[in-house]
Image 1: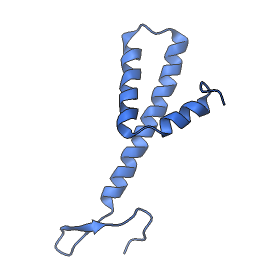
Image 2: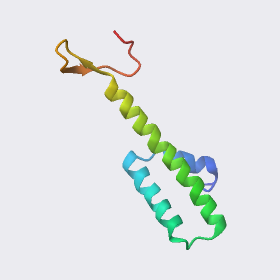
Image 3: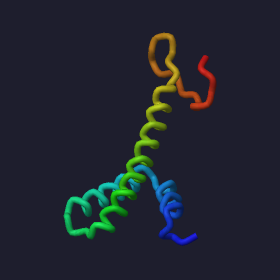
Length: 89
């Protein structure tokens, strides 16, 4: 597969940590805001930025779901966690 194909780009984005994806997204925004990018490249950057944004949002959603799964003790204090796929008790 050619590294310039959309699927190759998707694979690289999926392999980024949240912080790496956020930095890459910030770079895309900075380049787009500079106004020094040709139209075709702007469109490509915008598409990459949208994929990066979606990857970041998915990671944030997963983190929020994990946090919400914290098990509370009877007094309301955190008593531990359980995996996201564990049935609620």
